Image (cartoon, rainbow, N blue to C red):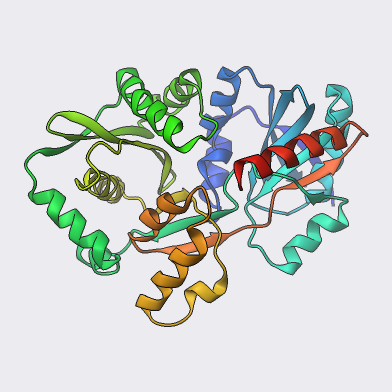
Length: 353
């Protein structure tokens, strides 16, 4: 058996292979690689070939920060021939003077998958890079069934918003839409005190996915005033609720509920099979036991101390199920890794995550 790692330069080969993969996100897409290049990050689109047949692939990004340089694989969706890939990346890391390799696995969190990384010398990272716990909705159901499985309050608020003639949901697929989103996004950042993405970042994300009509900016207005917005990525039969922003000026007007429902309906019109709500706050298995009313009560109790509490309960109200993945993994390659570890550990504590 002959195994080889080499770079892939053909978009069609890359995307066609991913079409056959069940567990994936747009962070593995060709266009996410283009976005990284726009952000001036060096990337490698690597394929593992068995007897010249493509059997696995990964996007790898070089991240340069004051605390250290590392090679990063966002949302690794398969562990097939992972050892071969890691051996290759160690060589690249030496050439690039990287202090460690970091992987955000898209593998189900269980002892078997955790052990895969332990055997390769990895350790749990001090922070996560992308969601390790996400919320997903099955879009193969019809609209009535989707509404039926929602939390009663969520369904009621959507109906109320639909009746309110002062609420309008628009799509603006242009850089102007990104700028409008950003104005509301800055307001959300000031209120919730998280580290924001820059307008430069948001515009480049739009420019990377826009040419293929894989991204939309949803704008929710009340009396013609923007009070809610979201950036949705549509890729390979899944919609991703990647960025969101809102105002608290009209707390009793359910614009955000109708906006997200319209995004879900748009995903169905595009033929998407799943709606990925992106990251949620953690809660234990005990919150999923019992009847529906007690489940909601337990979830609220467990989540409420987390910075993402409100957004998490909002997402879960639309129905669906959680997906929990192996935590972000680091492979230290130099003593400088430990400086990065300490800095990130402190940042995590300060953010209350």
